[in-house]
Length: 610
Image (cartoon, rainbow, N blue to C red; front, side, top):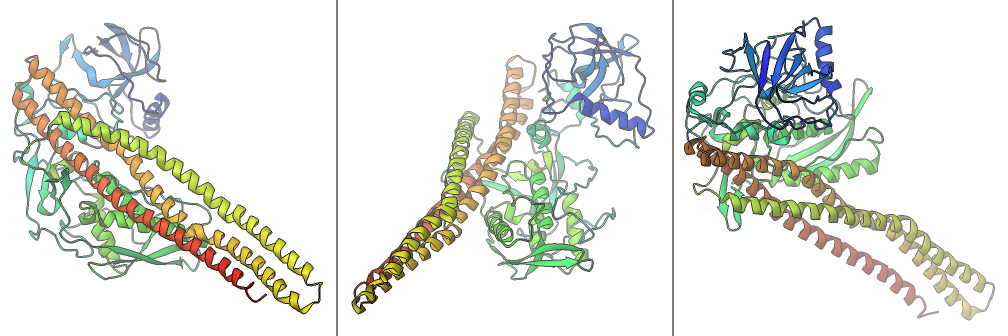
């Protein structure tokens, strides 16, 4: 069996993975009883020859005959050996199968014919040969049913999932059943519409097009994993309910998310240690009270962790605030509980004030489902984990203004924001380190120094007490009080960081989490813009119809609107938060020094009657 690979320059897609990891998948398949195809195939490679530096990849030359060990691809790669006997991986994306020296009819819908139908655990992707739809985007088209998959939450080292509000049932829930009973903002019930990024069958697209926008070789990139590539290339389709629609509007400073018509807040109070299994398992429970329901619910850290994982999966171009980090030890110490609660309060503040995150179903289920209603919790949990409006389909839910954006201006603004985030991240790290050192000195150094001064004044007072003259008693007492005042001021320094430095550092930690999100968000938008440029080049060369390129541009426009709206929200929230927190910091500093001044004034008054 022969394969022919189209000319291209092979690029690395490993992103930290090794050939051993992928090869282990195949070994696991053999151990499970799956028969891996024999190594008797050959390939004809037409590719710019070069020595690849990444482990596991093999260097090949144009028209070189290499042996395939299997037709089964793993994450877009095939395993084989070149003519020099070097065994490694070849890109499956550029392979054309030849049987009996003729091209088979293998290209119809899928490039891989021997993918097992079951009994194989390692991840496999059967990717369709792609050609962009030569029609405008968002034309109503009957959506194909998608296989529903459960996406488990991230494992928590300190609050792992157990039988609490969870089970292993795989029974599908009835459509539209969500615990908590939070009403639909649109008020339109279950109405919705089918939507697709293409308007003609895939076979017709393939027959029509003479050139296609290529897929990224790096299948591990954020642009690919987020679904951005599939959306831009016209592969997304799904049923969008009215309640799932996300609107971007033009504001005074550019695109922004449509405001939440029902704003609310949520308090987090009374972290309490609770036990189960007769005291064998302990955890901290937090009381949440949303203002729009006024109904208290109890949540554990693992519930926050599960919610965070669902939000990150669903919203690829929205910066979901990070929850406080896990901790394996000291989870029940008072200082840690207090710090985690402060972090969760900041997190909740950013969630409830985000126009999109605050309204999403999974967040409302988290806030409103009764702690005692286990059945409703499980129903809402399963529904969120089977949500089809994730990945590429998420972008179908975005509604944008009619007038398109100037993509050149968009690129300039994105580059400016990228430079801003880098500078802000550097400054946040510097401020955080400086404040940490400052707080350390206040707690240890300043207290010690003030205590030394206070003790020295006390020693002086004790020396003066040796003199038994009556007129010396007042002075002795005043000096002794001065010593006590300095010792008290030392204690003030110990308590002060909790009032001013710690809240500011909590805010910096939250924003450092946001800043780590934006490179991926920017990467999605940049990837879409690259596809637009590629399609425009094909049109100029006469290899692609302009209507087809326009569809790619329209879909890139949607991603650009969403990205700029999220950037706008970030800046508005940043100004609000840092203005408020800097005011709080300075007010606490002023109060602190007024308290110190008051103590010194009290000591001074003792000398008036000495």
